[in-house]
Figure 1: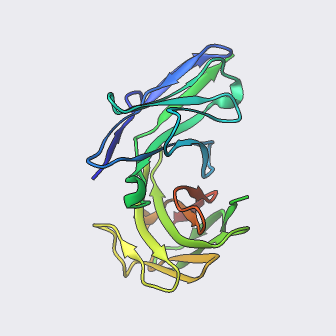
Figure 2: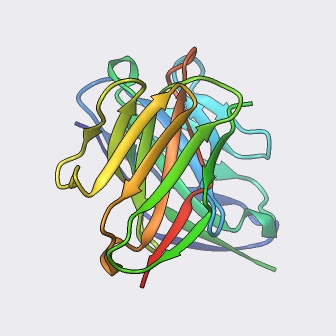
Length: 114
Length: 116
């Protein structure tokens, strides 16, 4: 079984400042890791994912996440946020090649202030 | 690509009635679809996994007779909330696995159900 912990339930940040959302997981098998973003009253959109290979993955809108196996972490970062980045962010894992059932963290609400 | 739609986006119904929610993969074939429930300001809770042409697999604690799932084709899964009660009010989200690459779930926009 897997579990995911997002250490911060809410992160206020000023526009153009950097942000880091922390995600730690536990699993007895190798995992695939995902970050999803949810805007108010909408479904989830895939932001980025790590399956294998380079431990640093990037999204098209400036986010990046680094897989750290020794620390079992997959923190999400953005060097300069915009007002439009205000949303809920979910970290999630699947048991890699062993299956595709997602286990979600509790979510982190990012509030970007002008 | 990999677009998933849900219909309706919002529904209000009276207690005791049944409500059907559709989940469609618009531009790909989905071998597997998932149904989630999300309470306000909370994470997603997996309700069931649906494979085309077979019975859904429900998570522990989810009543299969109350939440009927049908996955009749590779592009359509339906969730029917039977004899709905106010405590069934929630945000229901589906997702689908792309047949060729099975590592990523693509999510629908969600359906807000309110039971009066």
